[in-house]
Length: 297
Image (cartoon, rainbow, N blue to C red; front, side, top):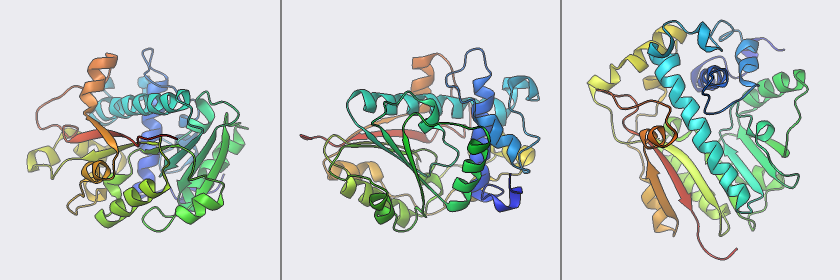
């Protein structure tokens, strides 16, 4: 295993991939887990920056009362389950290619029940993918679909690399941007939405996460943000791009996509587990968007 400083996950947005992996690991070991990822704890333990972080509920100080590993951790567990379900539905609808935009330490190519003719494309920076490969190779992990990692910068031109890896723009695609757009400059988000639309055949779908507007000073002082800075040194507010956000939902609608916008709390109520609203809530402006490109395939 390479030293953490050579992995691409040791700081900045890369470190958030380890944070989410730790949350998935903790969720995995809950008796009422919404999602299970047996690989997640191995990523956390493999990086020097996160080696001492909790990966099981019993290791979390104050349990679910902990703003980071309790409340925010349960948010990530809920998000994992909801987006797992989105991809499973696409597979049942006949979609055979999946693109994970900003794949990070996502292991859906390994842990979801794909059929042999599914292909999962994972796009992220080279250092993140290299770290991920080292950990998974050490576990002798075998994907359940054809897996094609692509080293590319999503703030730039990545379409050619995707097509070169075998992606078929004429076939419907399930696109997933989990925890990505919050960190991209506005212009990069617009280019990404343009590219996804251009490469999407009829019958394609896209799921992504956004935050609405600018959070108030009271929300920015919430325990979730403060605990994340204090406990693991990740300043989420500094990592979120500060430019006014484009209205990607409106952009997709203008291109003929149908969209559904939901709050995380909608799924908490539906599934019976996950965070509920609270005063000055850091999760209140989060929205999960599901978009569908209609027409005959």
